[in-house]
Image 1 (tube, rainbow, N blue to C red):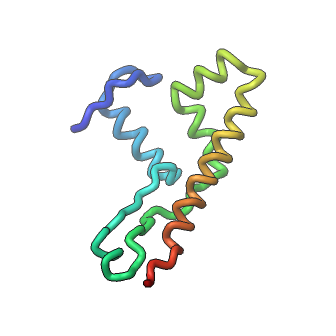
Image 2 (cartoon, one colour):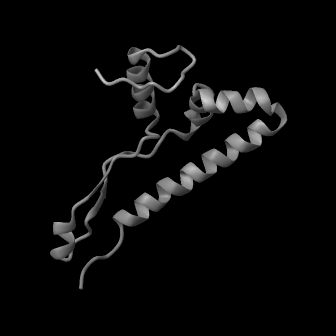
Length: 108
């Protein structure tokens, strides 16, 4: 079983590592994409996105489950919500960029 030695609210437990990854997969915040250079040689788009669009309604709750974001909320309670909103905005931009890459025309 893989181990993640970064500190989490539950400690250094490999089980928590698996559960956090499952939650990310549920949120779809971990985008799965592929690049196949052989397709580019054929004039086809080599970029494919296998992930569906994230459930943005759960994004804030997901952030609060991450130690790094929870630490920001505790240290800077007045600024935290603004920072979380910006993090969500940037995640949405990043996802839209991936979608645009899948729609590029690679024909000669």
